[in-house]
Amino acid sequence: MADVIKEINEQIKDNKRLLFMKGSPYQPQCGFSAKVVQILFGYEVEFSYIDVLEFPEVRANLPKISDWPTFPQLFVDGELVGGCDIITELHESEELKALLN
Image (cartoon, rainbow, N blue to C red):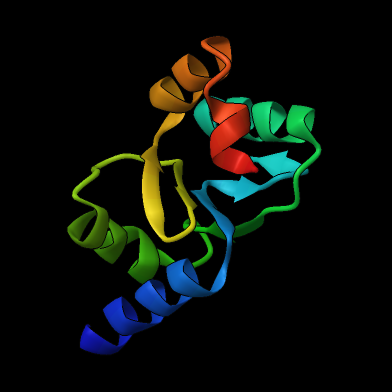
């Protein structure tokens, strides 16, 4: 388990924008992941993603790192931004653009 947590932390550190989601950006497997991807696509920013359905060990351990129980989870510059509700709120208040750039 320590290896998985170390690997997750390295992924978060090594990717400017990293979305842990269910499915992939072009085939999201839940409505919340689809909504966050749609928002990110609207900003035309590059982002990496990890499909937590494909990697159950990430799905099981990421909440221990982020202290956030649900997916998707968006990290920017190594910091958790939040899940679907927070991303949507930041988008609607136009704060997300500054966070992403």
